Image 1 (tube, rainbow, N blue to C red):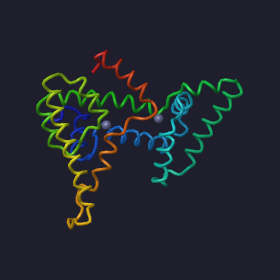
Image 2: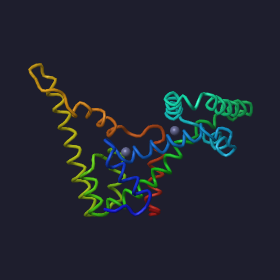
Image 3: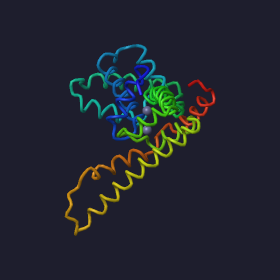
Length: 232
Ligand SMILES: [Zn+2]
Ligand SMILES: [Zn+2]
C-alpha cells in the first residue's frame, strides 16, 4: 500500500518501528516536539503564554515536561521557571479576585493538543484500516494498537474491515500473551533456556492495557461528538 499523504508516510513508518501502539507513539512524539519547540523558542511567545494561562497544565504533563527537560539539558531550566512563574502569578491574581476555584474546571494545554492530534490520527488510521491493503500492512507490522485506540478505531471502521481488524488484533494480543507465558515458564528453576524477546513483553502489555488518565471522561464525550459529526 502506497502512502497517500504526509500523515500516511509517518503512520506507515511508525507502524513498522513501534513495538506498542502506533497512535500512542505518534501522539507522544508530537507532544514531545511541541514541548521542545516551546522551550527552545516560544517561552516568551504571548500566544503560548496566554494559552497556557487559560488552559493550565495537568499533573501528567508537568511531570512529562520536567522529565523531558532532564533528558535535554541543552534547553536549560530558565524557560520552565519563566512559564511556571507566569502560571503561578496568574493563580495568585485569581486568588486575589476570589476566583481560584475555577481551576478545578480547567483542562490542560497539552491534553487539549493531544486531543486534536489524536482526532487527526484516528481519522487517518480509520481510513487505512478500511482497506484490505491497510489491514495487511498492520498485520505484518510490529505495532499493536492499545486497547483504548483499538476500541476507538473498531467503532468507526465498517464491516467487513472491522471484522478483519478484530481478527488481526486478536492474533497480536494472543501472541503477546504467549510471550508472557513463556517468560513466566522460563522462571522455573529447571529451565536452562536463556531469556529472549519475551522478557520485554510485560512492558508492551502494560502500555497496551493502560487507560488514558486525567481527561479520559472528557475525551470520551468529545469523541462521541466527533464520531457523530462524521467529520472524518
Ligand atoms: Zn494507543
Ligand atoms: Zn495534560
